[in-house]
Length: 295
Ligand SMILES: C[S@@+](CC[C@H](N)C(=O)[O-])C[C@H]1O[C@@H](n2cnc3c(N)ncnc32)[C@H](O)[C@@H]1O
Image (cartoon, rainbow, N blue to C red; front, side):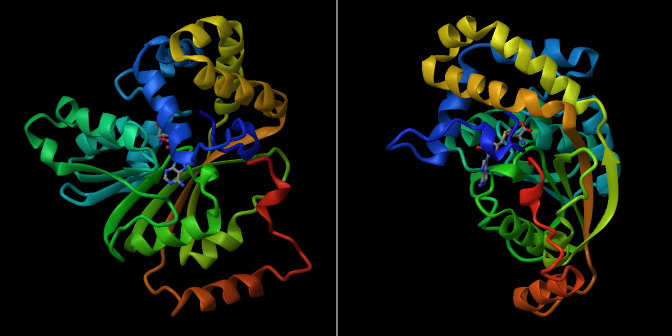
């Protein structure tokens, strides 16, 4: 699922909620290894099979995140929009940190919890998974030393609110790593939201191979459309095919990055003050809106 493209997700059928749409996808994906096989074919040697993410997560991204987090053993990592948990669990094992993963989908959270002992063996109790939303995480203030958010921020109903919430949960000096996409040549449009969240951009790492991975994956989904319908069911397969057809034409203009955002030692007094500061650095006459980019 490429959730950086808000328009790419099939419209909700009447009576369904956002979480039920993701529940259906995660439940369908668990019934077959077809989706994982197509991700593996699209990524080739860069596919981290054990992680089995529902996203653009490949070996280069995992390595980059491990390095950029700069975490010490025993610290707390949060996996925001964790899906079935493979990314957070892999990082928790590699960095010997505690893990708090959350996702909108109860089905994904249950699958993530069931994977803890595979990754962490006797230390499985170092990881917890919960149902929560990016805009309302339930995390205490200044709690997490690191947060990763892979291909999930684009689905938040209010990305600015989600960034503020994640920034609030970070300890001063802690880091939030988030994947983002923008139109090639366009000016990044998230500066205002980052500043309003009391965060500062520490690194912007290019992910030059990411658009080509999506292109290969979407072409595979379309080529295997009948197999997807048979193995995942009509609704889940149609949602994937809708995404593939919508996003494919945008990929030649896509630029993908990993942002490393650091919580400032002193955050502004209130969200209102922060928003005002951001407004001052980006006057209304010069839009910094993310609407300009196909994220
Ligand atoms: C493309 S998947 C990525 C999952 C995981 N990060 C990975 O890379 O495998 C996006 C995930 O975000 C979750 N999600 C979407 N909107 C959310 C929200 N507002 N709050 C929390 N999770 C959300 C979905 O349930 C889904 O599991």
